[in-house]
Length: 219
Image 1 (cartoon, one colour):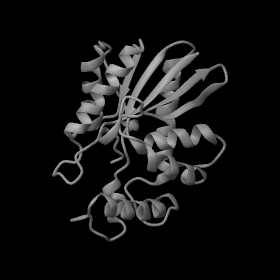
Image 2 (cartoon, one colour):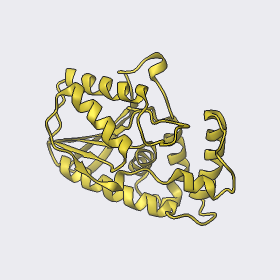
Image 3 (cartoon, helix red, strand yellow):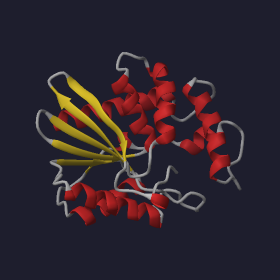
Image 4 (cartoon, rainbow, N blue to C red):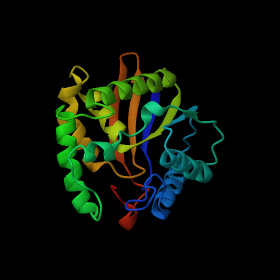
C-alpha cells in the first residue's frame, strides 16, 4: 500500500508586501515538521510541490531538518487559488484588515465563488478539476508501496479531502466540505492518504503534533 502525505505550507507573511514569503514562524514550522518526520523514519520516494514561493520555502525548511536528498518535482496544479482575485470580486478592499477582518471577508467571498456567483480568473469548478488531476498524479506515484510527499496550500488540500470523502459529488457538491476543511487546516500540518488496489483513501486529516503553543497558526 502506498502513502501520500499532503503538507500545508508554513505560515506566510500576512500583511506584508509579498504574502508568498514564509514568516519566521513559517520557517520554524517547516523545520519542526521535517525533523518530526525524520525521527519517525519517513524518507519519501517522491517529493512534489506547488510552484509558489511558500511551497518551495516550506520544503526547503523540511529538507534542511530531515536531511532528505530527493529532488522535488514542481506541479503547479497544487498551487493555491488566487484568493485576492476572489476577494476583489466582492468590490471590497483588504487594506487595513486584521486577520479576523480578512477571514470574515474571505469567507463571504469564497461562498460566492464556490456558488458560481461572479466572474473570476479561475472558477471553483476549474480549481477542483486541476486539484483532482494533481491528486490522481500523486496517488499514481505512490502506487502500491511508495511514499510521496506533496507540499501545497490549504485550498488544494481541502479540495483533495472533500473529493476523497465524497468522490461521487460534482464540483459544486464539494463546496461545503471544502469550506470546513479549508477553515481549520493548520500551517505545516500533514494529511495522510493511503493508496491501495481500490484507489486513494483519506486516512488522517490535519496532523500537527510537531507544533505547540504559538507555533500553531491557521493563516
